[in-house]
Image (tube, rainbow, N blue to C red; front, side):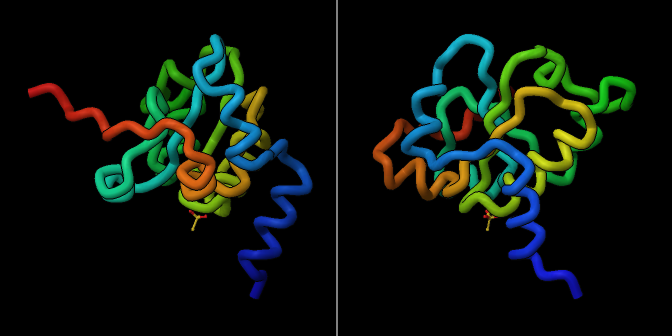
Length: 131
Ligand SMILES: O=S(=O)([O-])[S-]
């Protein structure tokens, strides 16, 4: 069996990544979208990076592909994308997939939301759905 830690290491050899303490500098910059790949319950429990776009990992390919019926405009900006999860494993694999699909400007936070919290970076509650 191929080990997940090897898959993450292979992904990290291909995709741009940095710890939250560094990635924080991109937060709030024009043309940069932070993409939260975690499950809804994690966002409810832990909060999220303010202004991040929530894309559950299971929807990633379907939301990125502009020809998919589920395509999301947030992935068609032509800007930069900073993916994150809890600890940097799902985001490494997801960033690699996004890169393979041809999405440009993708990087990920190598220590995830836990690194973000440890860095003392800002956190917001998950926005409530209207209605
Ligand atoms: O995939 S994970 O690093 O959030 S456990």
